[in-house]
Image (cartoon, rainbow, N blue to C red; front, side):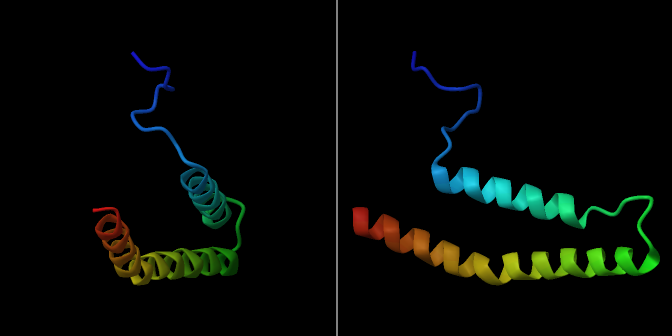
Length: 73
C-alpha cells in the first residue's frame, strides 16, 4: 500500500490554495446573527457574485483541462 493521507486523492499546492481561498471567502460571507440588515444584504450580494464568477470561469477551466490532456496525449 502507499503512504497517502486519509483523503482519496493527494492534494497539490494549487488545489490546497484554492480550497483555502474558497473557505476564507465562505467564512467572510457567512451571515451571522449579529450582522445588520445592510451587512446581510452585502454578504448575500457577494455570495451571489462569487457564484456568478465561478459559473463564468468554469468553461475556461474545462477548455484548459481539455487542452492539457490533448497535449499529454
